[in-house]
Image 1 (cartoon, rainbow, N blue to C red):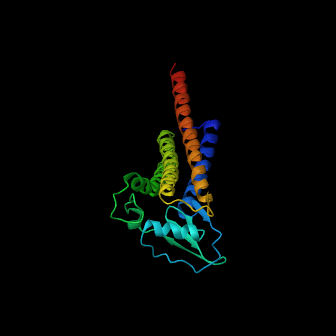
Image 2 (image 1 turned 60 degrees about the vertical axis):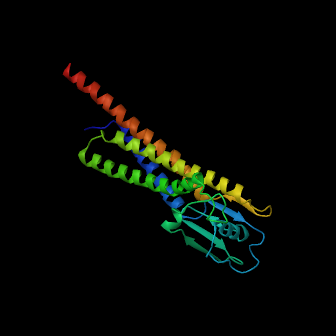
Image 3 (image 1 turned 60 degrees about the horizontal axis):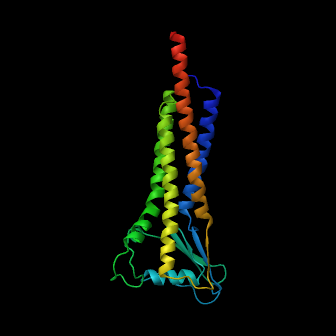
Length: 232
């Protein structure tokens, strides 16, 4: 099936945007710089231990040691430029959050619990949708058909929504945590570049999806008009 230059250009641009967005999201998921703390006490004292007993203890060490938070990793800076990073285990990712961060005997905070779980599940869902879209797109190329491209575009839109929802879950959950464990005045907190990469991937996936859907829909309409013209 012949493809108009406009549709071919849209497919190429959409594919490039999709690849760029996927790289951004993959880097964001694999790096621990979604949120970072800067403390004047960073260069004093010994390197704190990662063996934390409670959420309160964990966050206090991040505050005091200029720590960084990610979806799967967290880092704590030691004296000078030294530091250490560790990944969350799957069990830690699924651990319930409580209204009292000091004690697990308190009532479970369902909102924070599900926000925490969604923030690490949704990016994986997004990457899975894009992988499925790439597989369908490859099959579409082999079959020389633009019909599946519409479904590929829909998958990209869903992937963009998932990555956007993940960043929202992270920010809302962190805001709720800061209400329970107030950040000391001398500690500065700021959004990290990993979160900005995740945010940038969302509109890129959506733009890629919109281009692919437009190319598929417009090409199908044009093909029907040409077929009707030839029959007439």
